[in-house]
Length: 457
Image (cartoon, rainbow, N blue to C red; front, top):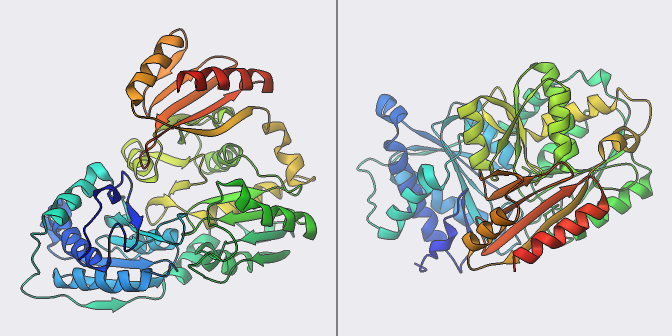
């Protein structure tokens, strides 16, 4: 067995380079350790029975990792439900919809082809983060003192998840109220194609798929829509086709980005604010979450539409935990994650987000670019990363420099002034510190961006 790199145990999941940081035997041990973790939970103490859902993405290393994970789970004495090759949102839906006792998704999300990993949940897709179980798994696996159960479990196949998820998604809106949009979708050869294709094919108008064949080698471009170079193909295709909208997803399909009819990326903060507007019509006065990275248009739209704006930390596990704890109905991240407390649990429902947005855009006479233009009024630095050895010293410099601003320390340091606002936080996965700054004018944005960067040296 390969020596395990301790750094694969992250704040939100387990992830690293396959056959460098971990190997197939790790997946077997993870199966044993996961069952031991679940047996410490109160719901197991009551029911004393576990059915654990397992799914994987299309990465080249996923089949062998899944085989060993299933072996580990059954060796621990549980029923392991093989959900097949599905997206991460479909996996979450399956865990909640079928009332499984938890689950493990094999995926490295948007990372390059050499990577793989594991996202872990409890019943109804409740995430397992570093603080709520990953540290426990790390300790058990590194000690390697895990033993199989006296009576092994068995593997059961369930290939219905995608079909049932689609049926649930289509109930979210009246399809007859959606215009005949021409939509280009780029799945980057990743798992987004598995739900985009059946969903967009149900809509009126025209659907143009790009890079929809599953290929874990990512032959065209990385499945990471946060990088501008990975958006070039869809932007060109939207303009070439004269499309109304572009949609692109990451490797495991839990992040979605939107391109307007002019071939420009729609700021996720605007998307988040528009979705907040829609969901507040469904449930007036609800709490709506937004992460600490600047995106003031979101809070503007939440408050304008009668919602309660709640700031969250960054990271899918942390946000979902906060949503459940504080009864936040909808939340969105600057990275393209959009979460809902839905019928099957609290997690990403990208299909529902797409339908809700299309319903909203269908109410306007002009183009989508025209619709969002009034909301595109702030100027952003984008995310700027700097290597760092001592984050606390930098945080202290910032607190001293901007002591007369409104300071929040929920996740790193957030500072607010009337004409600019920013967040500086440490990466959870790399030795980096990240700056996101926004302002009311481009001049102020550039000036304050450089001012904060000088403190980050």
